[in-house]
Image (cartoon, rainbow, N blue to C red; front, side, top):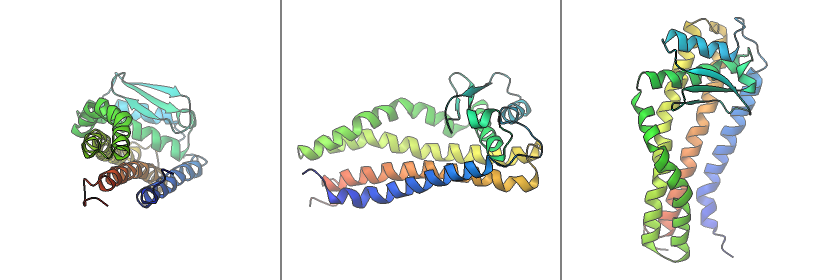
Length: 229
């Protein structure tokens, strides 16, 4: 009885985009995880080379459970590589590893968007957990004020995701450039690295799109934008 068809008009395209982006990421990674690089470096070795060339000695490369759970933690200075990446010599593995090493280089060089993103993490967590529920409560109780407050909180999530985009794109650009310059991949293997990282980047665009459409739905349905229906 609470289903709103208008919700589908906003969320369905974003959901479809997310599904396609996720599928392309997994399928592209799977494809190039079966292609071994001529150099034969593992993901861990590739990441360590990027760190060493950048003069970074205080970041530890460690294995991490899971699939595509690779990440760099600025607070612990740990570069965690998932099982299919850490010990693999595939094009996909070294591409992802160099991408994560790119984040460590960003941190070492005080890359501003990364610094801003780190500051936004606590606010984004609050906005994600509380903002949606406050907006939903505003619709249920027909309270424009609640919707506005919830939207402000939820906007922190969108801002975080928008700032994340240049961080991820820059890390990928560094990975594509350095993986070739350092001889981790050959000229013929560069295309594979690019395809893997480009597909992964689209998941961040899809996430931001979904958050934006959710925010617009509540603002329009609640009469904050465009007047009341």
